[in-house]
Length: 343
Image 1 (cartoon, rainbow, N blue to C red):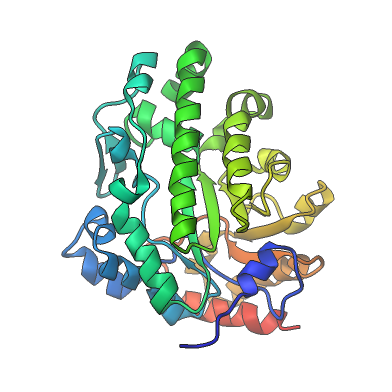
Image 2 (image 1 turned 180 degrees about the vertical axis):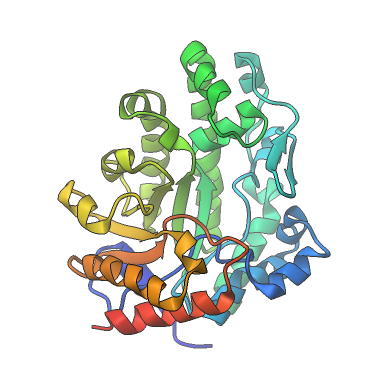
């Protein structure tokens, strides 16, 4: 095996690095032909329940693209069935839940995850990857309470989160009970990933951008502080990321995290001007990956130039890789970032 590449970890801690590290959200699967072939036979849940197969899907982009970190192949819904949530990932739709939360009683009825019993297959995958297969850090992750709650209340994906926000405003007792229960689950879930070998944890709050700053501080921030304060003792880099939430970047910076993830709506330079001094991750618009190389390069260079002005930049997309992206594009992009930023 190659020597261990810790560039990603050092950048996450704001240390000097030999080049800007790269990884891509949703790099495992999606656009890879090997993955599509597997998906013809197995569902997402079936893949994640088979450690050998899941490890293969997770390490594939490291081997194909030469990225500086692997991200565990799984879904943010993975821990919810153990809590009593009936969730199914439906093709072309996403997570669908047939027992949505409607009352404080529904929240009280939720169970609590026991990782070694309930998601042993996830932990076995992590152990397999980190002890035998990877020469780069493995990123573990979890969904943030607001995003998980939005699926649990809406019953599936939503474009406006009307039911979620109405529940939040009208049922504060139930809402805070749900936030607390999901925060506790996230702590247990991610701590178990770290114990199994994950070198970093990223918390995705994909849909929290639908809230304004005032509501975020009151309804969401206490749960986020609880999660990151508990994980702080684990001494691994912690990443906070969301989409369409640039107005919350300063709120995330105040959390006990190491890295703030940015989407393409807020540039690295603008984030620094807002006072964000921690490591930053991002932030190419993934839509650009369908363009000619000259266009991609023209948009990547300013991100890298701005990122290199301060220690602590991890190159990534502002959101995830989507199925239409050609693997060769990601391979070329990774090589370009490495070459362009070599110190």
